[in-house]
Length: 204
Image (tube, rainbow, N blue to C red; front, side, top):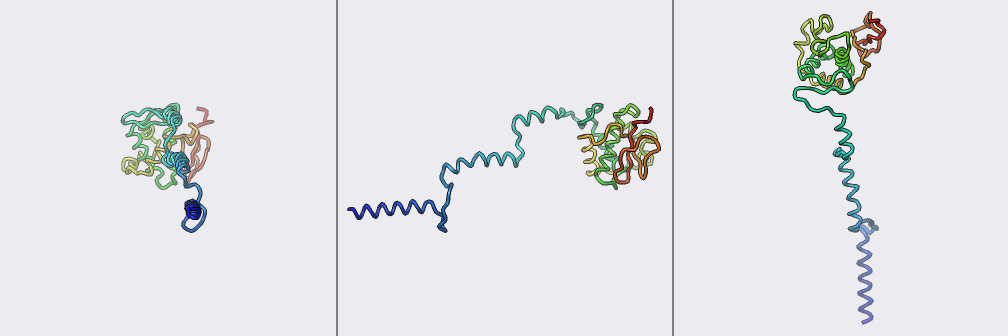
């Protein structure tokens, strides 16, 4: 009887020890059911991070600055004088960027779109995108028919989208030309082959 109890006790101890080891004999920790449940919150948090799931407060902050959807219109951000432009104007800007700056780096394409929007805001230029682009002598690419012949180019439309999403120049930068600065205006910066100038200091 005593021998039987000793055998049973030894067997229980061996089974208990085996449960805590892997197949190769190394000790394995954290395999309990409690350990598994404790890992769930971390996994859930990771999923939210990877999928970009916003917390309620983040969603609220996002909704506060996003402009309401208006059919046929594109919202413009970072500008006091322009809230929206039409889809037609958006495409016209894309075609103008193609005609004026398709051979430039992407930053230079955004800058050309920026000049168009700055002119719309300026008191010294027309008040709409179409009027700014079609103004006599304003864009040589319009005068020679290059804008009308330009395709709808994805990269150029992306450049326009960047310009309407966020301002990159001060609102006074309304001139650019290839190769050198204009004789009027104040030189501002050079991007690629285009020289950008500001209307500040012109004494208008």
